[in-house]
Image 1 (tube, helix red, strand yellow):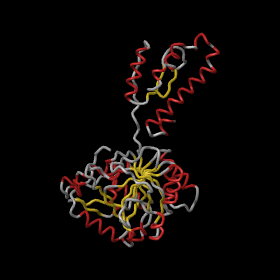
Image 2 (cartoon, rainbow, N blue to C red; image 1 turned 180 degrees about the horizontal axis):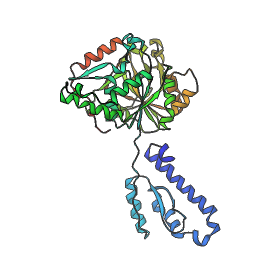
Image 3 (cartoon, one colour; image 1 turned 30 degrees about the horizontal axis):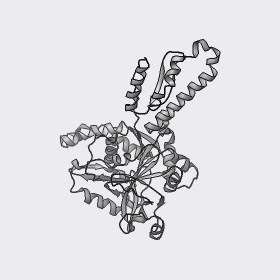
Length: 402
């Protein structure tokens, strides 16, 4: 339906109004001649053809079996709704207000945690980087806990974990099984209370099995049926990120602020040329002139480019010398990504993302925050060092609204 497929409210209203108007026209053409005495409905058509209403509605139609009974009008905005009600009363009719609340633009997140990690072997022979301990303030948690808290703070309703047999057991143990009381009795009360938060995260989890580490393409395609044609958030499970935004917004909230329902969005940060070999890199030919504008229209994507290639194809005006826009580790993707991934069995994620960019556009959001790849020893050590002096309160509030 239009309401489920179109996330931008204004476009949903235009589409629904046009559909109602078309339905009324078909009814008038095919049904009214069969019983003109009952179905001509002059009062209904006086309402639908009212010139004063047209500036405030996108369309409308009669209700039920038609005739001079009830009608539905789709208004352009809340203010337009108020004006339309005044006009309807002026026509001697009694309007009733109905507001359909906007659906959340992104309700689902995908977190792949079924892959291998050679950069931290043999530590990753037993556990993946998503379970590496990260200390923030006085508390130490597995990295994936911090990520899931961030997703909950952004009001994500479903977290799809792409797992293998071993990681599913680990996630069930972490998020869906209450800790033994003998263990909780031995830790401070404020830390023991965190077990309830783990269980609340567990209620949002859905597991999708990827038994062999066949890559992100296969992982995403296995999630397609669960996502059900909606835009979704993709976050790498082996990354740890934190926000530095002055207003306290988390990095996921910052990313979602750039999504209007029509284009996929990539979280970005600036890196030096020495980091190009380990990142997806973007280019923006026309950066926003307004510093308050968070959306950067991207003109190119490349995975782990050479310095020579980046200097030739990935320069972005306005950045410092030898600085580039690189992936921060999260994306909001429209369903178009699945079509691109299915197009080639060997298609890399960044290639598919660039194909989506060519077809429907791709927006970058420059994140105020820091990111570490926990699959690399040096990056993991940097993450630990960076968080050692932080306070737990510096992270986004767990229930902060986007």
